[in-house]
Structure formats: structure tokens, C-alpha cells
Length: 178
Image 1 (tube, one colour):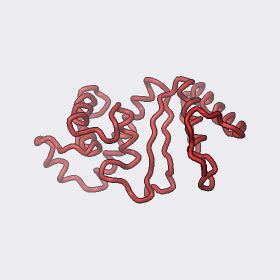
Image 2 (image 1 turned 180 degrees about the horizontal axis):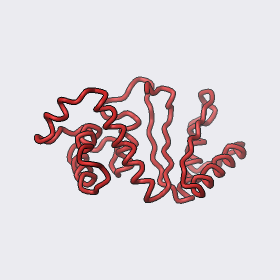
Image 3 (image 1 turned 30 degrees about the vertical axis):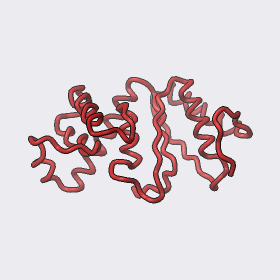
């Protein structure tokens, strides 16, 4: 497979690009989201096609956020959902603890999350729990933690999407275990 080079025109994908443009237009018109699942054999240009979709979405005024599911597993805090959350709140996936803590503080004071969800935000961003919520978090079941992190993820997406339409790209989602 030939590596993708930035700036080269996309050739032979008129149908796919047209379908994507229609999906974006429908999202803009209806205010509702859509899923677009791109699949195919390795080396047929899926990544290049997604890059084109991202360019089209940016030109249409969409905020674009990307994550990658790794086939060999992700490091702590590096999974696709956490990568998307970090992108949505404006920090890099490899942001240090101080940058993550500042972002958490901004969200905590913004009113996007209920006060009960702040512990899940800290967990999602790989931050130590504040002393006043550590005992509460430690007493939670794994299911409660997962549900809380899912709620944080959804609320951040909803808040960001209320400001501008979004394109969330997750590459290699077939490697995800949930």
C-alpha cells in the first residue's frame, strides 16, 4: 500500500464523497446525528477517505475530533473514548497532569456536568480524586464508574455539539472491545 500524502487529490470516490456530503447536509438540516461506518480490506484507502471526509466537514463548519483504536490495546487513558473527550475539551491525548487538571477545573465550573459527575471526569482524565470525593469514588462499583464515565462522555459531546456540529472519527473501531 502506498502511504497517504497530504495535498494529493482523492480519485475514484465520487459516490462515497457524495453520500458523505448528503449525510452532513442532513445533519445540519435536522440537527440530528448520523453514523457512517467505513469498512473494507486493508490498503484500499479508508484512512485517505476519512481524511477527505474530515476536510469536507471542516469546510462545512463542523468541529472534527479523531481517535484511533489500537489493535494491541491502549495505554492507560489512551483509549478512543478518552482521546475523543480530550480532543473535545481542547487538550492533546498526551497532555500532562497540570493541563488535564486545568481542563477538569474549567469543565467543573462551567456547569456542563452535575457535581456528582466531577469524580467521573477526574477518572476519565486520569487525575487523582480530590480528597473530599476519594472515599465516595472508592466505594463505587465498577458498573457505576463505567456508567458515570459514559455520562460524562455524552454530556461533553452534547455541550460541544450545541455550540457547533461535530464529526467524531474513530479509526479501526473493529479492535474495540466494547
